[in-house]
Length: 358
Ligand code: GDP
Image 1 (spheres, helix red, strand yellow):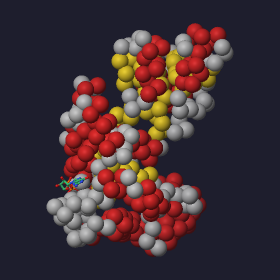
Image 2 (cartoon, helix red, strand yellow; image 1 turned 180 degrees about the vertical axis):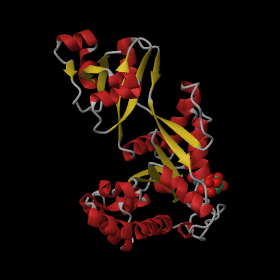
Image 3 (tube, protein in one colour; image 1 turned 45 degrees about the vertical axis):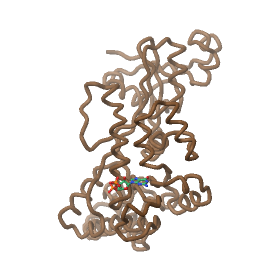
């Protein structure tokens, strides 16, 4: 499955956040046979629709989608110079599908900042610079080869042009992802550049920041078009010790209406370009993870590869229509249940039953 790699300078709260992610332990609870890597934290993507589906279908249990985060430990400054830890750090980032940077915004005299000051903008730049430098090295190696090969193979001319454009962007000190609205990231996919991965920023905040909309807007603007999540990692780890009511009360006291881990799950899902579709029956109401733009057979394949191979059609009703109708039979009677074929592009909130050959 797709993962977000957690990076950040020392002492910004990565471990605190990651511990909250792992102690959350949804995999262990819901998927007892899943193997859990020690450096992977899994969070549920809460979905109120599942509760309603369970009501309609009398489902015994609810299985939400999950998002996985990988803890990428290691120093950062100088990583692109390729020394020891630095190399490993970059290799781990290369394996992640998106980059989740934890940035310190909280003020706490007891927690030392590596550079002696709390400056989120400077911290973001330190990490971005290392990734940009590493990508520039990759391009410096790739360009001569592309120049040469594109003379024989005209298919490579476009990649060469894209690589040159990418080099210009990096030279100007910007990540490729930050330019995604004007630069086609897929044009350099085969070069596996790190700054072409989607970015997500977690601003590890204190109450002062969490309740300061102007400050949050300023930080959001600095990292757009990436997603931003504001949370207090220390509070998040405390929440796990509390029952739901006390947890919500604590969150409310710092101006939050949901756990930061929930916001993080949602943003992570969005950053990875994922979406869900829903299935329901007497056993379970469940959300399945697919990529945005996936077709019906592809979606069926997430349940079982045989479902994709033997796909015939999908019986689909939108959650909103089913919710309104109150039962599958009523939704059918109202003409809200459609049969879709193999070219159908799945929509968020589709409630599906697949028909297939075995
Ligand atoms: P890492 O080096 O990025 O993994 O940072 P840690 O998670 O080890 O956190 C460094 C220190 O900051 C620890 O003493 C944490 O208790 C503290 N810390 C982490 N998050 C917060 C926070 O949101 N607020 C405050 N005040 N302290 C925090």
